[in-house]
Length: 248
Picture 1 (cartoon, rainbow, N blue to C red):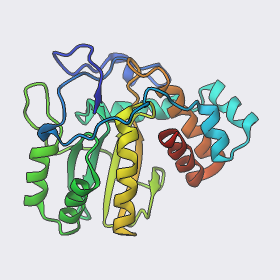
Picture 2: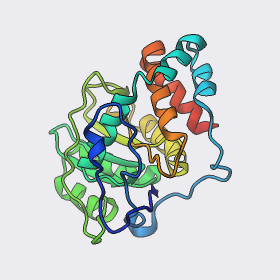
Picture 3: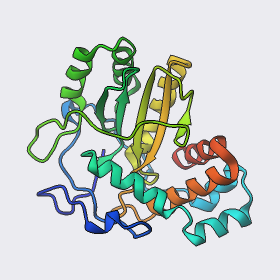
Picture 4: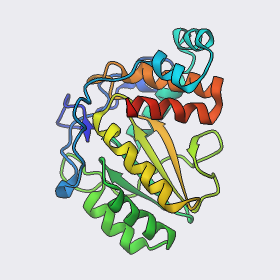
């Protein structure tokens, strides 16, 4: 799991984060690794990252329109809004996800957990088993700088405006806050794909942005590029773009 190691003594939410269109950097902090040592290792060669233009081409959108959208910073506000929400919800690193049950309860998952552990969350969420979910969160949830689990996330409700893989009506949703330059997010991506295949319609995957700009200079342009592709190529285009970034 990747976390910015600046300002390690406290969560830092810069005032500029509330101003639409401003570049937000250094907004997350290092607070330690995933508990239990279950975080998957970053893949070899993960320091390389696809460019927004390469990913947009793979997604099949018009090159000129994409370049114009990205150059204008058309979706900077959208990325900033996701980042603000993530930090306000207590997230400090990537990938971090919220499991949302059919009853609307939310539970954190911190780090690049393998598919078998993710499936335990999904199984418990399908049963609305709050006891099992709380136990999982206590072991694999987000920990603050004091080592205490940050419980009861409050992420915004999933709507049709989100980037959704699967059905909006699925019983369980995993809302992933991710960074397109993060090597652990790259490692996590195939695990999420495997879980999606396993639950075949009973689970939806929602992607939201948490670019760690102070350590990943390509994270912001990649995130804004994904939104341009969503405009030009729809939801399917967005996911082709994300797949290409994480698989190349």
